[in-house]
Image (cartoon, rainbow over all chains, first blue to last red):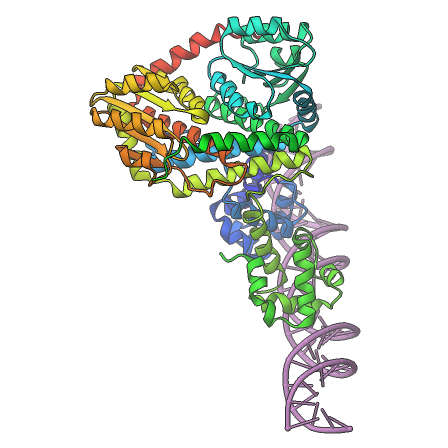
Length: 281
Length: 281
DNA sequence: CGAGCACTGAAATTAAATTACAATATAGCA
DNA sequence: TGCTATATTGTAATTTAATTTCAGTGCTCG
């Protein structure tokens, strides 16, 4: 469901002069727009009724009632979660809001844009693997280790590495039942592309968590894409890593489901082991 | 704004038989209800049009269009992001949806419940620090390293450790300008509580990213709380770590803002250094 | 069993939205 | 500059949707 207010902004340049008057009137007080008829809306914008209707159509609504409905939804979803740059004048509360909303917005993009087919392939590979390696460099390093922390519960050998040489060596020992999860936002980090290529060349199954169409994606068996965001605003590094983690969560959930009962037992044992490290008071 | 679906439930006993049929039809598929006219709604519920209208009035809407509007709003807000356990019958698309929505839901909780005062204190400590340590164990380990990856851009010495002995040693060397960010979801991991306590005892400023009221929280200088959730469902470990990361992002954003221009330069230099590792095709 | 009352739906009314079309403005071009 | 072609806008007619009125039905309770 696309946000109508976004839609207005988006089509602004394709609108005629009078239609723009309507847009202005609506943006000025969207709450009023919801509870008013096309007639009074026309009066508010100082145009004729058909113009209001044409405006609705221009922003691809079926008519005025449909527009009102969509507008109501947009306003209700406090989740008009948009990315907004942090400004020097922001207080800490605003920073919280902006960071959280940017994150949510990206998660929504992920949900919309994720390719389920690739995801299924990736899950299949992981289910069939008897050894999983997680590779990451830089900001993606912690992501690899996070994956390790979760996947080891599957009960198969799992490794994570942020060390180029280690990666090169383990890639050299790849076999058909080895899965390699290679994590990179840009997909353009040369050393990572290199080891991913080697792992694949040696028969390993390479899952790339990266931007589709990138060099890393080219050498991988399957790419689970993350939504491409053009400009590198300040959120990009934060958000990309969060999306990676979420993908890891999704993959683990998928694999856990597929494996079913056999991993249940492992989860319980891990939980038991942790219990003894806890202090209750 | 009261939720219309709630409103229906609430007035259910005051509704007549036919009106109840309308209620049932709407509850059965609210999405459909939004996009139909009163005529087809009447047909769906197998009643007459005036009855539908009366129903709307009974649940204190001004009429059918008003009802549709309110319903649209409820669906937009409510239906959106809830935590739902993953079921064995779920396909991969459903898993994506559930994981993402659970994550978003938790982020919303974070935004609502975060204590801005503590956050401000924490930011102040970090701004004033001339050395920052990030401690985590287990699942929080990667979070600590992730923080390292971001905070080093501030240009002050930053360390991350998941090693109990390392932690103990660095905590022993704590001074008033040393900040310690201790990360733990439960706040009950004994070794972590111990080193946090030592760091504080030696004069270090300890920021705990944990559940308020936990033992770890007690020994810390300031606690930045994360929303308490009954930590039973399968999302807890996934989500807690995501919230930690988001908190780190927020803290970094806050500190970056406060420090202003002096860190800008660092960001640029890091960006330049990374550029050379990228492949463009 | 029947009077009174609430409930329901057919039909009429009213209101709202959409369409068709004419008038006006605007841009392009000789 | 003046003319034509096109786009934009508004008026009026039409269609569609929502609401009200009112009469019929069924139900309750004495």
